[in-house]
Amino acid sequence: NKPFHKFIFLSFINKIIMKRNDQLSRKIGARFQEDVERSCNEQNIFFHNIKDVYLPPDIRKRVKLPKNKYDVLIFHKGYLFPIELKSTDKKSISFSEKIIKQHQIESLLEATKFDKVIPGFLMNFREPKNRAFFVPIQDFVTYKHIAENQLEHNYKCRKDKKLNKSSIPIDICEEIGFEILNIKKRTRYRYIMTDLIDRLIDNYENNRTQTDSRIMDEH
Image (cartoon, rainbow, N blue to C red; front, side, top):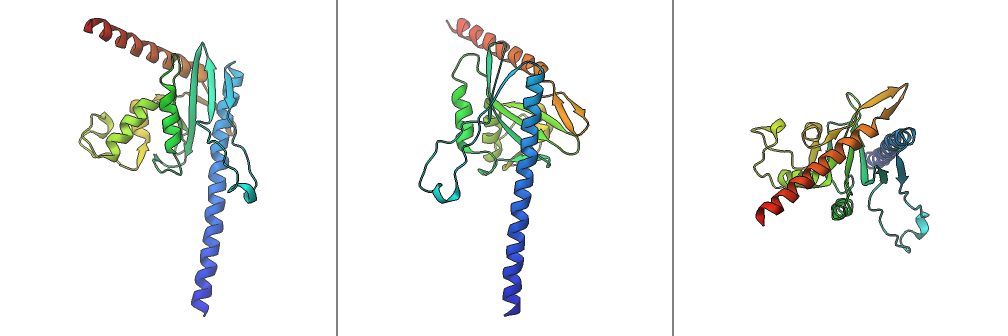
């Protein structure tokens, strides 16, 4: 049956193309992490990559490994930054479990319980211009809840518009996040991490001061 064999062949080719596209996307995403790491090293900032453990396919089903909570740990000026990195060539980043895993969100939220710990996502939008934002986990979770449940919101960039319930777009990252300045060196980028960290620490301390003031007023 020629039509059937043609269908099988096309399905096979499509799977190969999807697999290669996925591998390419992972490779490009890894370049973003490499650029961030090099930037930290050059600016004398501690950077630790939490590497995934590779298991051969034949033993993956028999051995269960704990999932990594996040991609990297950055430490500077007495503050710890647990970070999950995401990179895309689109205008938004999907909430899909394949892209942003629930255990990553929960792990980043858990880290907020500790003093001088600032967890969040580093979101990289490669097109049309390479831009990256640090989105604090609390602000990400708030946005995700409002978007998925189509609740009323106060996001200025989406005024009088419903939010996309399946992703976080670049304009929302602009509004709730902290953009990371970058410089292009030939084909790679260097991110001004010292500037980002200073702004995150200032924001953290301001929020803590406001919280302490409210507590004192209540008493």
